[in-house]
Length: 242
Image (tube, rainbow, N blue to C red; front, side, top):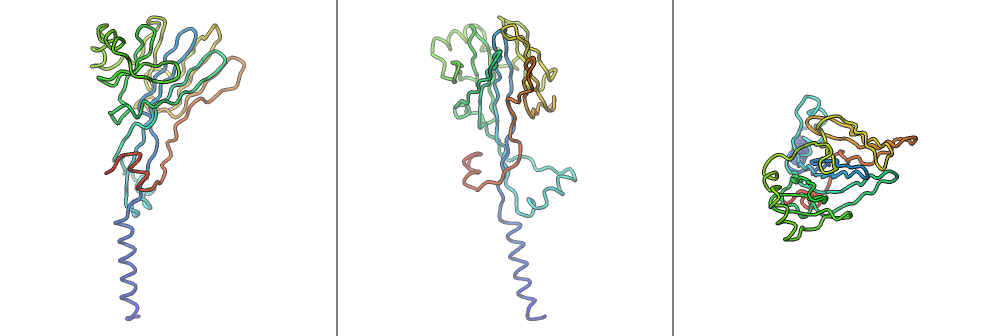
């Protein structure tokens, strides 16, 4: 027994070193922006998704369910805007467009607002401006930027964007977590309901469903909020090097 003791101690030291020194890298999706616009013909849902990341020791990772049950939740160490997409809702169809706006926004929290100006949609991450061209975002021209700023939209960009309005130049607007979870639209004279599921404050949507008259509910979006283990290389690609 005495001869085995050093071997046991060495093995325990190796295990403790592994559990306390080596890291586990975890990422999960989150929602930073969700805004619905609609008029009598169509609805447009702008959604910005982020990636939350954290690195923990193997010991913390293995004990995390117990630690979380005690109320000690590990907060994200990194947040990055990873996806921005647009869902277009018309009376008989749903069209989804993935965009590259997340790669163009320098601010990591999907920090942009969407405005309607001269019947065009603009994404603004001050001082940059992008126009929605029905299938993608593209940088606004100098003429469009000048008209946008001269109209006083610049002042709005420096304050909180209105979270909701009704029938302003034919458009209405609602934001995730602000107001009722269900909105009844009339698109080309046909009733359509858009339902947000999730916490209202702080905004934490879990899915968006669509109901058309005489049809079953259709889920048109849900985020992947489950944590995923990734390699260090993948973690740094998603969240940036540490």
